[in-house]
Length: 72
Length: 72
DNA sequence: CCGTATTGGGGTAATTGGGGGT
DNA sequence: TATGTCCCAATTACCCCAATAC
Image (cartoon, protein in one colour):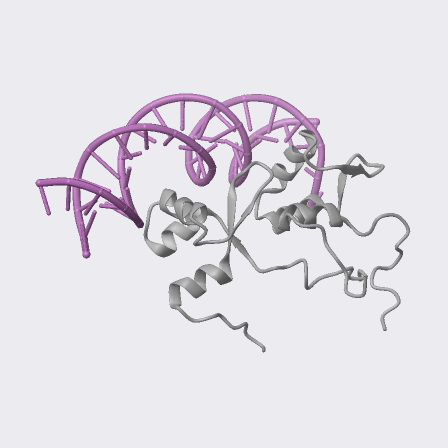
């Protein structure tokens, strides 16, 4: 198989689109954008300027409890 | 200590396929292609005409900060 | 009632995603 | 199977403004 270059640092966890986060919080996508602008939510930008949010962070904010991965 | 993480640090480091870059940015592979066409991402061409992207460059664009290794 | 903060809606331009065919 | 390329619809960014809650 392949020689696995670097794996852990690469997969920082899944990223969510503004629309997906909006569904989870039951708010308008624009509201999610405002949260990002206000620094309440850390965002990764695509090269086109669109935002992507870390699933783990979103879940923690949703549940109030940090997530743990299965198998650990 | 690990001497060899990648298999052959000949040039720059590992190369990623459009699909792999797409996963990291949470976008469609075609979007990655557009970034290459727009000059936002430097690409290496295979002999078959397909693109390969530098992992280091991708990671820097993802985090906004150049990567640093422990021990440097 | 007034001032502040948060949210949603409208409008426009850019980016992105999906389908089709190579 | 994945990718390169073209076309079109959906999503998003960014602006301003109104309604709501406290």
